Length: 259
Figure 1 (cartoon, helix red, strand yellow):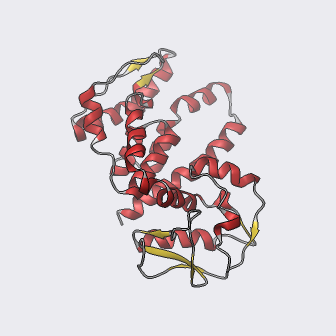
Figure 2: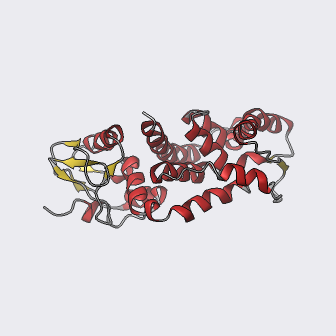
């Protein structure tokens, strides 16, 4: 049997969002298996099996999760495929590929990228006007900064406008220490950080102090405000819905690792 990723995922980039875009342009392959399930613990954790045969990542590593609950979630994604295998509808598998093939080998650069967001975090940059948007940002984002202070002793400053202002080194260092070392959590936090523009929101999700919907809503305060004033933008909303599936995959990883 050919490696199942040879035609399905092998040419997909490791970044899950870009992988999803490219998957939409890639010819789909027929579903060739009857059942996907989680196998017994082995190399790399609990493997995903298709008709009893192991799935491998694009770099030929076992597609295996650190616990059975996450492996079963991955298998469920494969079982949900119908006549054709659509990588665009497999965000959890794409994230797992990225974790196994990239994050596990590049912990320090991934953690550093997350840490860089702390210096320009979304929730620290506030509008100067109108008053309604200023108030909305404060209502949603101030509690995130309060959590960072309470949890890590980190005092981040807020900035009006888009001109960069350096955050206190002590604050960045305190929160940076909370970036996960485990590659699966790290990969999930990295994905959420990239999707939201906020490492603080990503870490709040990982800590369980904010749920998926709250984090996603907080990341789109400005966008939602604009649509309230000027009307819905269906193109923006469609793109956002697609990206939300990436967010849900990362949130699933974080939740199941704690199960």
